[in-house]
Length: 616
Image (tube, rainbow, N blue to C red):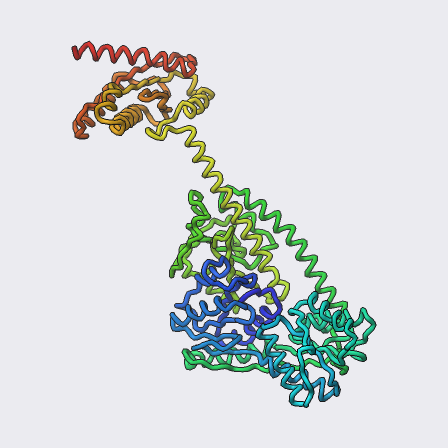
């Protein structure tokens, strides 16, 4: 379903839970916080929640098409269920191979038109339709025409206005009616919100309801009970729908694959706007007080959620994230994030091209019901659904799953399991989900930004050919060393230089020259103890600073042995040779970079000169 925060959605879930739980059923709701407006299914971040549906445990899928309002989404859900041989109930229009449940909107509107003609003897009627071409509006328009025809009353297009189901359009169309001077005896509206708007405009012009013009609505929203006059309407009772659903659930296996439609009759709700005396009205003060409490609660929680979001985005770890989310404002909630998304070295945007799979690895990053001292995020399979699932099902909780996403990338889902199914709690779901989306998305983006900054820093500090520090990186690390106690003690400075690089490049190519340079870098790192600072500061010139006074003879011997072994096994047409110069500083002797090079360079050339003399 969509928009569980709306009365039509959550009243049905509450009624369904009340009816089916004693019969042994459990309810998992896969919810999108808003209607998926584009007529598509693939690629929607909100409909990604359907990828987590585990058809191995689902007995029946109920698609509440009337609130989804997206044909492509409905078709995709039906196809998924039928692929897994799971029966489908659709609350809405008939679909092939499904059991379809729908309120009998057309006949219900017939009753309200008949009421106006037969009870109140009104014959000059006007219909305030919804959107032109909308199926629900067309049902009611057909009913309007049919009843007029039954009673021998004429019909023409001037008797219809299109208020688009919204107050503003309905007000505009009512103004046109008043301005025309052709005032009807009754205006029958396709929904209650338009009926309320019509009453407001008529009252503004001194036209009394119902004495001058009767007005009716449709749907039975709560506001019609606290207006003066109260609005006569048609109520689609969620309890009736829930009872009919249970009847069909018990027969779902027998109905699987068959196409059938079951009608649920709405109820005529008689009030004063048509000229009748209705039941006792709801206390307006009580209703307004409820609305104000919701509003103030929403504002207070929105402020707290914004602060939590900001704190989460600055966290250094998921453990800190869980701690920040552990506030009273987010309760009866678990958050599961896909492990792949939490890899801070991966560009989160590239994860948008996700593929549906039967099982995903998730990380539980928040659990409001955790009662220990420190929550540590842990991995679960998507097959596990959510922590405590057995306990929640056993205690009759409704589990509401909503997709979490950021920048059009699905990242996981939130599971809400309220102990009290109140409209105020349902309204919290989109509010909390939005905050969680921003919190996790901001946290993830900041971590990825930090990773990129490290990568950029590495690019500026590391020589890409050898993996050693470049001069900038070396000086930064060397200055850090000098600030420590170890930096004030003797240091061993090693200079290494590749012999005959020009000959290798000119004769065998620069690729071979690069191979030889990397070999010298590897040899230098091997002879230096862990924690040494190694740099390539020239084409074939490298330098290392080692803590403490090292054994010079041993280092030189290991250096030569490396090349002996390499030349014996590499199969190269040329031998790789290199010279070293090793200098040990005195206690407290502090050298800058040029001095390091000068001291060790002199010793290295002495070795080169000595080798040349031996080879003559």
